Structures are given as C-alpha cells and as structure tokens.
View 1: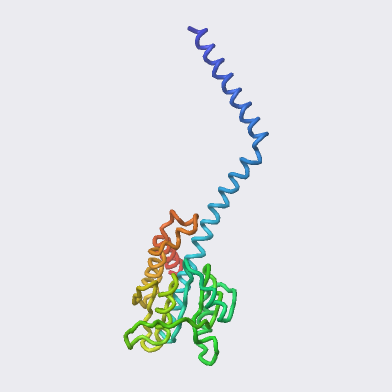
View 2: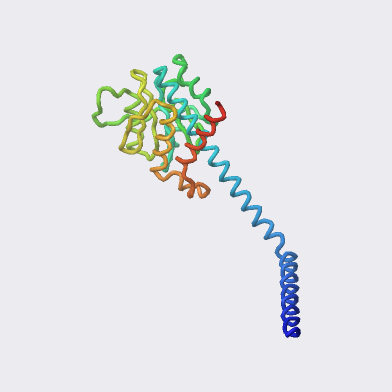
Length: 233
C-alpha cells in the first residue's frame, strides 16, 4: 500500500517536472510572441476605453452646442458623415481639422458677420473637417416652417447616408435628419444626448468599430452623465 502511494507521488512529481520543463522551453522559444499577445490584449482594452470616452465627450458636446444654440435661437446646420463620403461638399467649404468642442462651434454660428456663419459644419470621424459648406437643397415640397437650413439638411440626407442636425433661428427647434427621416429632438441636454446616441446606434455606425461592437453606448452615456452629476454635487 505504501509502495503504491510512493509510486503515485513519484509519477505526479515527474509530471510536474515535465510540465515545468515544457513551460520553460515554451517561454524561451515563444516568450516574445506570448508577451506581444498580452500587450495587444492590454492595448485593445485601453483603446476600447479611449473610444468610448471619446464618443461620450463628442455626444455630450454636440448636445450642449445644440441646446445652447436653441436657447439663444441661433440658426445652425451640423452634418456628420456616416457611410457615404461627403468629400465633394467638404472640398467646397473651408477645410479645417479640429476636435469638436462647444466654444469653437458656437463661436462660428454666433458670429453673424462672419462668412463662416452660413452653410454647414461637416464632421468626419468625429472631427470637424469643413466649415461653411453649401449643400444641395431638397426638391421635395416641404412645410413652409422649414427654411433654407432644413431644406439643405433634407437635400444632403436624400443623396447621402449622413446625419444632419438643424437649429431653427425662428423658434429654436432642434431637428435631426437621416436618409428620408427627420425628427424633432428634445431641448433638454440630458434627453437630447440620449436621443442623439440612439439615432447613431440605430444606423449601425458603432459596429464599424470592433472595440465598440459589444458595448451598449446608450447605457455608457447614461452612466457617464450620472457620474458627472454626482461629481458636480
């Protein structure tokens, strides 16, 4: 009986030694590859976190800009490129390459004496790429309450897969246009940002980024804003 136990222990020890030798040999041969694998894994998680934070900032900034313009009844047209390239209209505007931040955007639309006030601001990959771009007007008959900006928003979305956000200088209403659909949006910052995110999510735009495919952006926005409210208190 004791002999059997000793034999089993000896076999276990030999197996552990063999496994240890195999692991050491594998590390010696494939150490770099293994290290690179875990490095890529960490970078992927870091990139995912960066992508989400970047988008949360963008959506909150867009919502705050639209609400500010709406409350002051300053007309504006902001277009976000989706699946179709808007290069022809970017080229005829004033090309820039800037992050989307509220102070810069509002300074453009509030300055009525500037030539950049008219036309559309175009966004590609969440960055501002063109100012004062003139878009094609819709040829459809629309309600008389919609002015030139709305007609341009309808026109560009009829031809291209993009999103257009219009602020009416007449009544401050905020309208979103995508393809052949348009929707009046909330003028409450908290509700507006959720509505904007849902518009983008419904188009499948987030699926283009592998790091965001399994992320519920709407939930992330709600949690992000909730945490910010707690910090402000």
